[in-house]
Image 1 (spheres, rainbow, N blue to C red):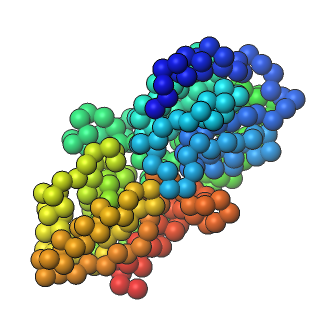
Image 2: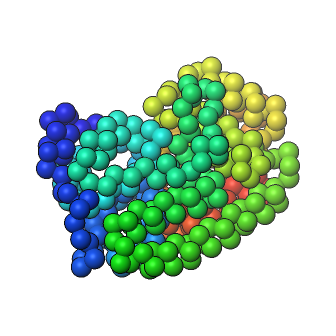
Length: 304
């Protein structure tokens, strides 16, 4: 979390891009998560220079803005963030900056009818929308719309780029459905460290269980570990998964608890949940991250 004086500095000296003509230069974009940054880069093409705040292995729920982030946010022409409280207290910063520059919560373009509102999340929406690839189409269109508003001379290029990317998303969405359907029905149970995959389960037909809640700010107690371990033992779940942005000790504790009950469960591999992989790798793109996760899940739960 930024100290209040730094928030005040941002609000006072933000770069006013709302009224400027951006047609003669590259648009400076700051995005919070890697998934958003990658999508902005695909839509914006050579018209944008994208800076992502949260790199590989970073948990956005717990992220605290640094002094260098202040400079990046101040220099940005536009800021794209997830919203739905994914970025925690950083949301306060974005609200303050909205008076001086375009500041866009990309999930605002999603029809609330399609947002998950789990009863344990106290009336708030689940922010992990990127795990339903079909919802990421709406995010892509929201990014296209904002860039076109800021730079109308390049609107056709943004639309063409977005059309290509949306076609890739639609193809990926169908591929994920096919892959998950190949898992034996009784084995379609996805267990991870925190409940980030709810949209994935709802869209593609999996029973999703997380040791922690939707936000990693919640803590799992011994009873939570034991309850989940008993479920795994009773259902003979073959594999559970660690996440790149969550300490793997939480899942290891569940595995040990299962073993104490006379059963065994494998660590099926590492999934990318709240952050993508390293730049230059397949997992370092949104499309590649989804493919990696699905391939890992299918292999582990199908006994491959």
